[in-house]
Image 1 (cartoon, rainbow, N blue to C red):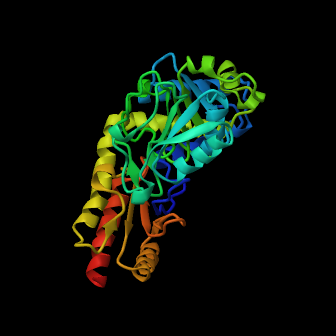
Image 2 (tube, one colour; image 1 turned 90 degrees about the vertical axis):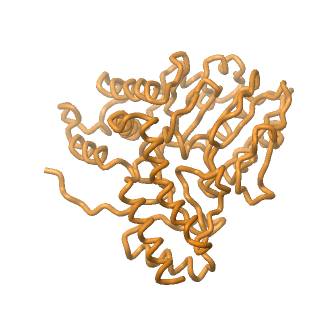
Length: 365
């Protein structure tokens, strides 16, 4: 029998909320996975039973995200932070430059790592505007021979998100989608490579998903350590070395949950509804709450806002904690408040936060 546990209103930016049905199923299967007499964590990654889990997760991700059949899906380790290095190591040759669109701290980190590998440039930036918006397509400046154009699809710290993506022609488009993958349908065929840490929308921390267009392997450097070559992981179906098996199992269970929820189209509808509950509380507060992102660039996943003073923000966060809300502090680099309403955060949590925000305003205006 499953133990009944208290569930917090979890707005953590990552690792973040997981679907309760997934956690409950993992609890049921933890000791004896599918009659094996072992936990999935104890299975050999070379066993038929684990390979079934592994390949099912790949198949489900392709189905749910509309990934073209020929694309490769990899399960790697090292987080998005390792991808900041692997991307230029593989795809930034000495005779080319790579363009980076600057929309926040994670784009800055990706650019800094690429600078260690080769020549890079800022294809656009909204830094001077405190990263309050996403650049317009006509602001993107890059040449036809650019090695690749890199963007961050959702910016957790500043609460901005791309609503659509540019068609870059022969220039490969690469995206860090760590914090909004699967939150809505995306035309994956626009991208040469997508990478995403799992700990926001896909599962627990420890797994990094890479979605790779096959022709990119022809462009990739061959003069790299084995584990840093995408070709190594493609050739071995992400089983060159021991993968994070439990994390991949959990990722697969999250994908099954996404399917039962109606897929990415239904999740987008729910995510808009959830985010709008909180944005409406901000917009109707007569300035008591101030959103950071411009309306046209607002994130569905990370709602960032300030109050009228740091003192009031501290009181807001302290009172919210007493009410059972977790993870509402803004990132340490910018302060303020942030509600991360990822796929697994239920509508009830967003409604409860909205009600608390209105009540707090009434009591402290």
